[in-house]
Length: 240
Image 1 (cartoon, helix red, strand yellow):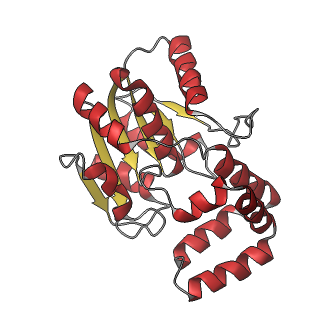
Image 2: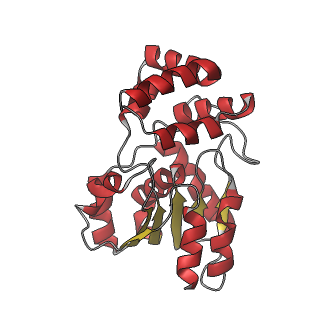
């Protein structure tokens, strides 16, 4: 099982699940670029081709032919991208509050255009200005207060702010194609499981619809939690 964590985390976020599933899987826990012990990208953006080459190198080095993938939050888009690129080798895909199925309009705006990237950089690196903007957006109901609290927790230090900025820009070209993924899941009979938090304001239930509408038989487990504790709750659910 290759597992990819969320933004601001590292491989340790999956340790509760490793403990529960250690009899079923050998886990390979990744630190994504800019996180944990992983270096920054050599290029500004990580391409799908470069990601495929990286995973293929890992598989070759470890002697792995068949495998599964797991992604939490931001790591969901890496799990989905891996499924899209290497579907014939994949047995199952576990998605925990996955990013990468529905792209937030805020993310698209912040990462696609020169001017908006400059504005994104300014607000990320100037926390007081970010808080002022966030208060305005909350008042006019353009963003959720829980999402702003999460953003503030991941932007608490200069290092965190730089990591978020580089990650958002660097991973903006990792864009899974849900229509293609649905075809591949059917063709290669990949088992897909989705876990969501009932009170998750960051990646709400509607965000998975572009995939689940194409694959209505996918089991979706909704647990009584928000975004942050979902991995722990999935581990508890699996034990019960």
